[in-house]
Length: 287
Image (cartoon, rainbow, N blue to C red; front, side):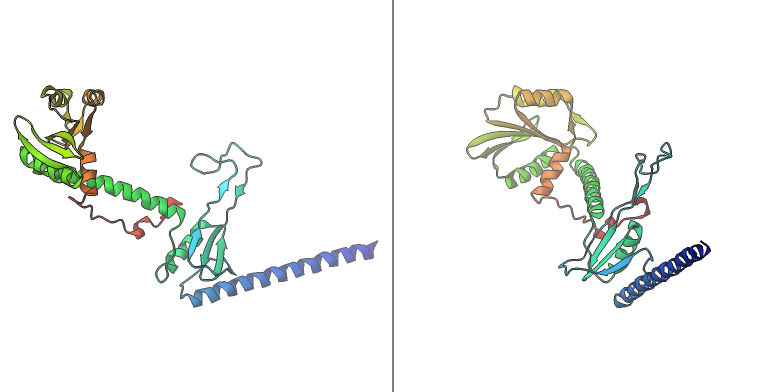
């Protein structure tokens, strides 16, 4: 009985020593792989959480970030303390496919830190999170540009409705209309022709925060222009009443935002602002 106890004890001791030796060897191999990778690609450091493996030949360098999460979590992703049992952290593997190498870690921040350093010398595609951020930045920058450009344009043509009508005419020519006559009455406008259909356009330059009301929109009907289509262009907006009336009378309304979009689309004004891809790189807040 005593001999059996000694044997069992010795077995567990040997098993433990072997397990420790295997673990140490694995750690040394992993460290050697990371060191080799660092030297080959001239890196200053690489996190111990990252595993380096041989990968398949790829025609591109790319990576996938997956954030670990609590099985029961709040809307912000943090642990829901109401669940004291059976709540665990679900670890997600983030991966980097780079120059015949496959690297992974269960810490997305560590993979991303490596990607940023590699990007100083190598091209690595944007990940999904960066693409979404880039799209959001472009929309934001474009909105800011439209707003500033519209204010500048409205200020330039303030009390110069005749000159504003000329600008509208330049746009409409680009859009395929032919100008037949310029209206120089109480309201500035243009008679147009496109594919045999006659169109009347009334133009009104106002403050970007102001609205064109129903009475002005009615003028295009009261004057009884003998045309097929009716358009009103302004640098401001339209009231709800004006929009409803225009819909009932089949009048096309072009407000300031749409006007700027058309000027940009047809090359009369150009949005030169370009969002640099580096602007969409992730920060600590993004994690």
